[in-house]
Length: 263
View 1: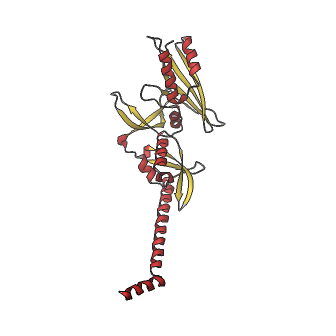
View 2: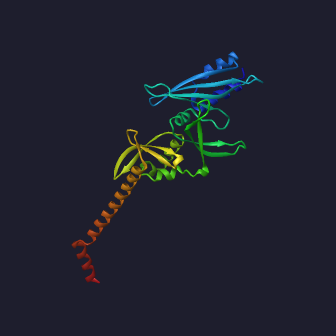
View 3: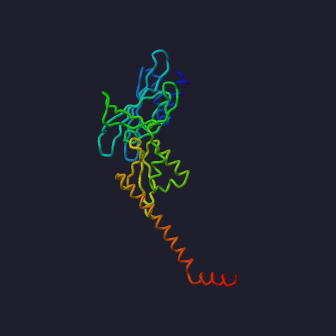
């Protein structure tokens, strides 16, 4: 058994998001010398059960094994598996298990990938559920840097409290780039409201959901932002009026008059 090969495969499993729970099964299958084998992995994200079959194959020229791909099924609570997707493993452009789940949930994932020349480029990935190949795998759309999607600018159009703190803002953006749907605090007319957001590079915006995970359309979201801006303006005007009233009070006028007589 090629020990270096085994350690490399263990690292691949770990960094692709499958942890170390499959290590014993990996070693056992390699010791058997089978030309190819599968390892089954199961995890849960919320109430969803994610079933994954990891595919390994032995080289025809050596004793080395390769982790070539994994097939993922997402099972909703109380419902049968609706569809599966295959994710291919290569040296630089791997999609992790959690990213794969987020993609299958219809969300977008941001990745740094390498082209054939070894040059790094940044891209948003999102499934096109209207187009599939003969194996049932949906087309993965790529929204490159020159497409013009600016996540930070899209977030700034909304009255999100976490954007006011640099660390929370950074954590929020990193989470959205991984394809997560993220809980945030909207501040509307001075009232804090828990809502959820996800990146939408195709339409260069973010999707907003209420606390019951019902989609809020763009018009409603813009109205929320306008209401927040209006509330701040009204508060500022009220303070200015209050200050003006204080300046014109009899006590202050008398003081000003007294000072004027003494000059």
